[in-house]
Length: 296
Length: 90
Image (tube, rainbow over all chains, first blue to last red; front, top):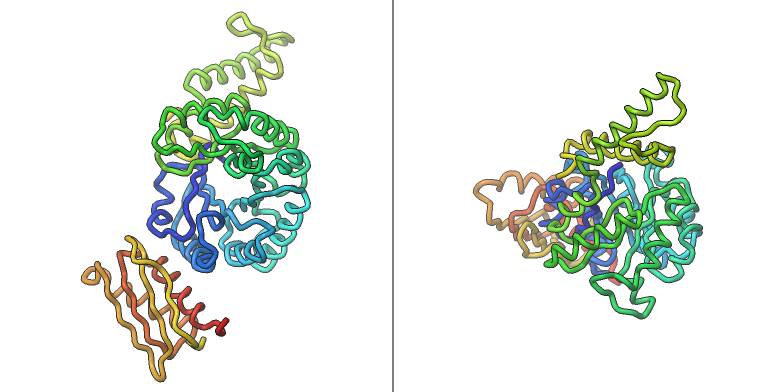
């Protein structure tokens, strides 16, 4: 599943929902939480359900951001309405404790059974956006088989940390590293917080590059204008793809010749290099399946 | 479903539809105003009537002010209005 760019769309805005599939993002996050006023939650759930039933979102991962588990029964009502539509992922906000993931997962399992959906098909993405959530990141990441990625949310996190968000992101350096390490240790993906200045294209690019360098798999977006740049940053370059093919070819050739050690351009090809080459080629394959250019 | 009180759903923004529903003593009265009525009037009527049939609403006064909403939006807003109007007074 490609998760380079995940675009938030407000759940109660038909104008934006209708265009979700043409905005270029790998995943669309239908937001029932922050983007929807409390007295419009019912309308947003029905609208998203109706759109999901009618729209053909081919090649786009569908993600529903439900309300947090401390939001009365909003989160249950969100799941009741939307699980029958078979979304790919449920994004759970403000996860502080692994128990929250388990509670949500058990409720999703009940609804999968009622809706005739294969058990475990719908995945979970815990949103880490509190200091406690960051400190519990590994326990949260490894809490349930449904987990597909940890998602870092920096706006609420920095409010909780009582500091300002900055363009360079120094204040979330620790949280970013902690979330990536926890996710990778649990064998799942890591998604970076959106860059919130919609007019600063260069700032978005730099922020995405930083996130990729740290080890994130992709980045959330709050505007379609940032999607193309984020896709570019999180895609392998033509040179990386060519080199990955060469690495695997060299390994195959060495095997045929019974050689133990392999070198390419004077550099030893060891296990981590092969692993990275395989990751690049897996990404290339996923991009070809999606029908998009590898380096847009 | 019985329409017990007045309710509204949707907005007057582009691609949305504003639905106003109220109880009626007898029959279903539907008034549709749309910026695209000439092109899509029949489709809009079909979506509205099918949603009322789905929720077995037989008596209501309804006004729709459509701003170019898609079929899925029309159905969703009508459903929301019906469900809101069918709730007991809080």
